[in-house]
Image (cartoon, rainbow, N blue to C red; front, side, top):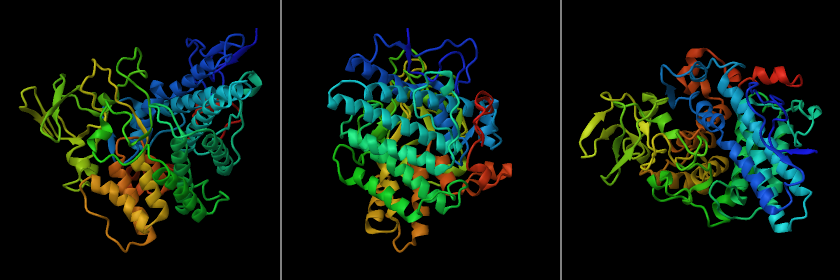
Length: 499
């Protein structure tokens, strides 16, 4: 009996799998009993979304996107691979990079399975279009994650069903990768409407991702980032395209908007808040990590081995878990915030309390760094929480728009909306385009801190070595900082891969 395969794994350790031989193959569905109904196809789409919650994928968002930046250091006894990322010595054997590469392609192959099978189904048009639109978005989303981390990557266009399909060739250039991403996003935009569903993507998520990709191309080519400089794209047209799609998000819908309350964005009880365009689905009731989250523990310090309380802006207390202090906010980054910036005073914790409201620890006493409260869940269960990675937020898109349009009235308007919520004054007028865009990137550092985006902003602006002291100390060049190498294990499995 022929089988349909929704995972990248055909057998033990096929294409890009990096699995040991004790791992059982997963994701096999009989052709006789799958994709026969819309409910079957919906289950396969959820299966594709669930690839994002793999431990090595969801944690990779932070290990890769934050450690190699000026925002975080890693604790001294964290694993060697994390030390490599933090100190800019990661090579093709780095475990975090190897797993991230693997799970991006698992997610891609699951999306490919949905696309192939649903396209050939006889479902009604509305159901078919929604399933296909989300699958195309997921494929594009994962390819964009890959290109941000590794640069040129192989393009797997079809579901892997045979050994002969297990060795895709490397993309010829960045144009090929981005053209593929944009084709998927155009298709997704045509298929989807505006319809919020926590953990799922809609038309606004598609337009947001389109804006992010165009901004990355524009600023990377303008800044002389290797491989981008060879693209056959006009920088100004790319900025215009970023502004066009970001503008659609900001002006053409009413479902999403700037959340007027900063702390509400990070309320685990409000994953459907106005800011959340695309958010990962995790809940403390899940049985396995990935279904539930341990993100808070990665950022919060170990304080006497017991849970503690943190104070809210209104003076009330929130119970939170003791942490592993993996990601430690650097003092230098903490000091860049303005004294009255609410993203410092309300979202960064420097004091903790007991149940009676008595301070039991402070920076320099029980713990050594200010930690983020973006992932606090007051109803955590042991190590399980509902804190979720924030994949695309409205204020991220607002800053994309501001950067793309430059020092225009609208550009100032949107960056100032973000700053106003943080309790800050407006950006000074009269800036040049270069000055204004640099101000926006600085603002993004404060606004999106600890959300897994910092490294990619530094890379596309070619300022890694001038911003992150760890990169400076490593003696690497901007060209060396631009991309990580394709994992050696994948090159060994697929002879068509090379950097």
